[in-house]
Image (cartoon, rainbow, N blue to C red):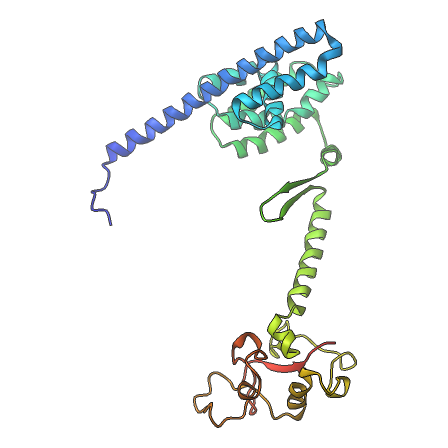
Length: 321
């Protein structure tokens, strides 16, 4: 245990100020990086005009070059180039705020992402050009005082108010973003991500939960399979009710079936494992399942079964064929 004295309040204040200053410097560097990417994109557009037939190849080459140099994924660079062009060309006040360290690059990403309805309205000549500046100014007021997440929420509301977009129209526009992605994980696993209407997502989750619950309730361990038994809590909601028409009995088994002897003891009512809370149990004289079953047949190797006088937590039922 460290015996160092608590840091003086003045030192804590100095550390906080230094952290804030560092964050502001990071924001300034992010603004500079965006300017550099936008300049490079401008050079690409010049080259595109000179050789339009090589446009796609030139763009992929540019993205790959920066991805390798920055040790980043191609998709990350595609987004970075697009945001840099949009920031420097259409959001000068936001770019200046980033360069001065007033907002972070996370704020910038959220504001740019939620500007799509406004930009679409201007492109379709539904909204005047100055609407984008109004959107930018309103979002900056929020971004300078709140977190990126809260900024995104307010930016979405601002865009809806400026465009006059109804809730139904927003849902219809969002439906165009539906997609399914798979991300490979380790050890043969994968992560499935689906973007779809919420009502369908809730229904899918509910159905998967039902399937998982049913599977967990009916899955038996290898020891349970060896003993040919299903152990259930008679007082629990998840107790398994077995159908007599599908349950194994002694008559259903061949004479040489190793499970036959176990079922005979169960059906005779003479073979029950002792309640572990029973203090008078003598393993040398008590005829219970723990004594009659082989070690391989004792389910989970625990005596958590039913005593003959009913002083138990669980009861034994025949296995389902």
